[in-house]
Length: 537
Image 1 (spheres, helix red, strand yellow):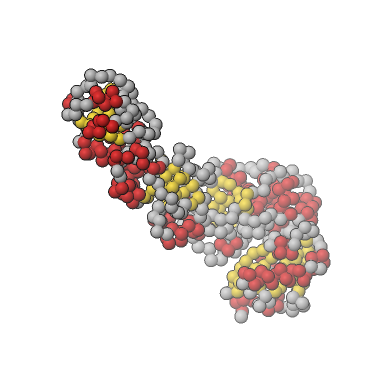
Image 2: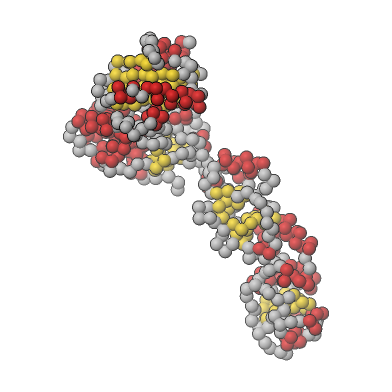
């Protein structure tokens, strides 16, 4: 059973990562298989938290788009280079495939075989040099003829001799395969001449045993002479008739959206798929792309598709755990929504622990506490509720944190150093995209104890923001620098619609800069005012 994928939003913050890990832990504790993921690089604050509580960073998830491995119908049969062309034709007929992948003994892809290859071989065949021109094995020969060995030792391996008829008795050489009938009187002479296999076309009851005994294998075939000769040609090995040709093959992990146009535009009808070990996983056709098993996911700390993983439309959303507003959230299936007007997603997640009767261990309680501290700026954000504070106290006891405020300041300060980050990296540490009334905007936010240090890089931020405006088409890019000591925020605004910022906060920008006293929450103190400004235009 495939695990449930649990993840927060792009440009993850501490709440997004910690709530994701805690949710996955809870699901596993309740008997469901769940794996936490991240949608971007974690910031320094989050790294500090995970390191303190000894928890590994979740793996990166780039997309949940459907892959070939998710298809519900993949034809698993393949043809081996040593199989007879009769076997190949029977499989193609059974599956209604005009072509099939051909593999070697290790199931590695060698080529493709087509019905036309077999038909052309039949047209060109010359029985006088059949075994010298086309390779096959004694195993293929007896299987195709459905023969029965009544005397002698039947050989194995590749046939290296010639195919002769009884009429060519005088030319028989040691090791030849000879075809005859029970009416022919020369079997004894064939044995003496050194024939390795004698194929006798008759019913077993009609056969008269030779007077000479030897190691020569005598095979009875219950077919006419003409039918037998035709069947012998079908014993040729597939590998003997393969042609060098170009064809498409895919990897098991390839995404359907990447391959569908290739398949649609190609004259090829069947496409081999290779697994991670280089072996053939199966064969797919264009019509197979319709039905696939959708990955099961849980969204934490977000609900907008623009903030989520790529390919989310291909996935089945089982649950959303969030404390943000819902905007244009639509799914094809019913979804369990666990949402609450609190300051942090971990506050909601802890409620789910209580509902399930699961007590989080010290490290899980510690990261949930850290998430609440981060999202509420140590309970100073206007988004902070009484429930957040009460939850933090309970989690503090479980995490064995004696002084929450002391730990909180240590954590927040640890996350405010940007010495090793470039301006573009700082902007994308916690950036979210929005579309309000037709206005495309990005709002990035960082918490710091050194506002002046960041403002010294203002020209660098201006260039980086304008580069993203040009590349991503934002009408407005807002950078919120929040002072966690004084609970103020300084805004940097660029784009064609920076007038929205002045309209939203009833203040003028000075050199694209504005100070907002007492403002620390993007969700509650910035976004609602921007939305109101877009609606008033």
